[in-house]
Length: 260
Image (cartoon, rainbow, N blue to C red; front, side, top):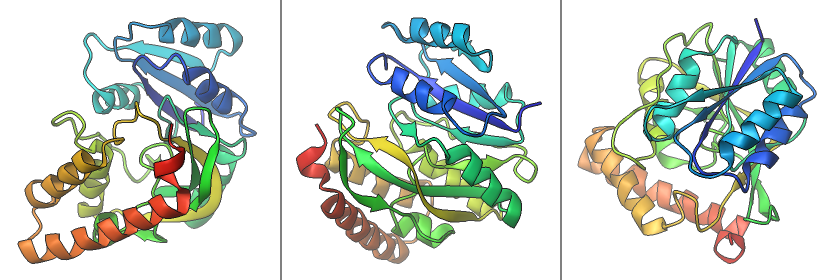
């Protein structure tokens, strides 16, 4: 059995997918399986995955029967994963070579069950944009709702020894399913921890799901009130801190001038 299962949902990402796959296969830690779940792509994504499979037998492909979104694709990957650790990478993001080694060493040494690391944003040409982004040192219910910077899915690794029934939220499309999933885990007594190292690259472009900041803010407020079920007072107070944190990251990383 591999130590780590890397899971990537794929939908029409032929432009960036080779970079993502290469970043996984070039990891210094070699004890992993790489599960890519195709969500009914209509471009060359499947051909790119099959070429990687010919090169490296750790690469596997799964197929969704219909286009179901990234949460359902990740869940399909989780159901077929064999590793103790689950590491998630979106198809347009990529990792630095020491990511898997550093994060699993850190988790093992400290018995942490959820860990996320620092990262930099890149644009569509993979040019870096601004400073390294670090999330909160501890990810609990408050910091989840008030601090940005966990790197969404592409930074997070889960230890299945203590979290054995992970399932991503499969609600309305584009509703920050990763945020909701972390919230459910926290409410079940789990806590996230920061590995303060720069180990990944998160892509921001006009095709990113959260490119439209107004829609992203609206979806976040909806989650606070209708899924997190925060009181009006707590929702407003935490939401204000979220906006300040998100704005500060955008300024430091120059997202508005370098995302295309």
